[in-house]
Every structure is written in C-alpha cells, then in structure tokens.
Length: 276
Image 1 (cartoon, rainbow, N blue to C red):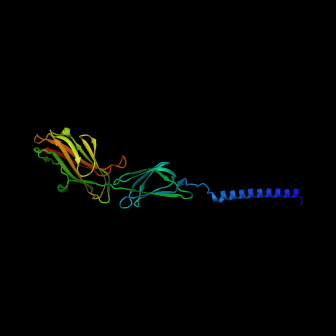
Image 2 (image 1 turned 90 degrees about the horizontal axis):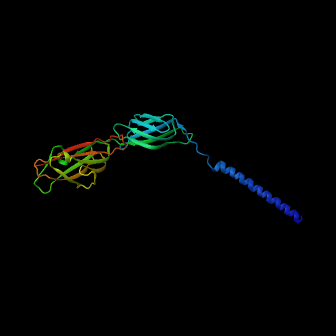
Image 3 (image 1 turned 90 degrees about the vertical axis):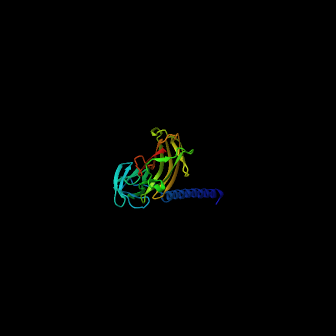
C-alpha cells in the first residue's frame, strides 16, 4: 500500500475513533441522567391524617385541650384522652400552631412546616405544655406574709425595715415561668413617713421601673417546692412623728409566654410601715 492509501486508512480510523467517543459519551450521559442524578422530589399536597400530640412537659402525660392551625387553612381540633388531635385532609404547608388548656401555659409556634415526600399521606408533630404553678410568698417563721402593720423604733438612727421573704411554687408537677417579684411603694397614701431607698441583700438584682414607686426582681423559673429567699431592706425618713405610716405592696407573678396567657396564680401582700 502506497503512502496515500495509508493516509486515507489513518483518517478513517481517526474518524471512527471520534464517532465511537461521541457515542460512548452520549450513552454515558444518558446513563448518568437516568441513574445517577435523582429525579426532583415530589411532595404530598394534602394529608389523610396530620397528627398533633401534646404532653405535659414535666410528666410526659397526655394533655387534653384544643389545637388551632392557621396557615393554608384555619382548623381547630380537640385533643383526645391520649393527647392527640387528628387533622383530616390538611393541606401541606406552613402553619402557626396554637395549643390551649385552662391549666397550662398557652403554646404558640409559628413557621411549623407540614411536609412529606410522596406517596406518604400522614404526618405528625409533638409538643409539650408547662402546667401553671401557684405561688407562695411567706416570711419564714411567720408563715404567710401578714398584711398587718410592721412597726419600727422611730428613735434609732438606722431607720429601715427588712422583709425576709421566701417564694416558691406549691403545686406538684408544675413550673412558674419567669417569676418576677414586684415592690410598689405608695408614698402619696402614706402619712408623714417618706420612702428613701430600697436594696436587696440576698444577692438578686433589683430593677427600677418607676423611681421611688415601683421596683422588680427577676427570680427566673420556679419549680415545685423550690424555695427562693429574698431579703429587702427599705430605707425611710421623717419618722419622728409617732404613728407615721407608709404603704408597701409586694407581689409575685410570672411572665406569660404569650399575651393571652394568664399564667400562674399571682400572690400579693400589702404592708403598712408604722413608726412607734
């Protein structure tokens, strides 16, 4: 074979090689697209059953009450004895979940996504509620804080009255959320006796809400029978007049988790400081 024939054969071989590479490449791409790259996920558009389960945050016992979903649709269901609400035919999407029970803090959660890959037609979510506590406010040996006048000697140089308080939740398996002790001084309702200052000598921080009138102390979350001690030192002046008085109110309440939540039972004790 002359050189011209060899050249033609070589050109044919190169052409076949290129065609073969193209064919193999196309075959490989088809295989890759068909088997290696997953198809887009298809999601369920509505659920035969969307279960909401609610339990007590401390005991894990089921809770009855109501569940309201607000989103693609607005639906409310009652929780049964097992603490379960079944939303039938719920459209998939993002909802606000609100759960209420008269003995518990209301729970409200936004941005709750109900979504499952097809062909699954059921979905579920679980939540827990914290039961209301009931506050007790006492002053140690005297038991419950009395509203009777607190007397002090108006002849001494150090004119102040101490309040030794204990605060706790007295209902089993409950929690008082965001406990706040509030001291309110009504100097205008007093008689001659003037308020000067207030201090906490038990380590907590006191916050001024209204100078000379209202102060708060954050005590955090209080569990059952977990007693917190607070000692207040109230400074007074102009006590030279016998029977001079100054009303003081001390209360304990919680910080509700949502605006409509009444929370734990508030306790208030009213005192009258009286010079003798």
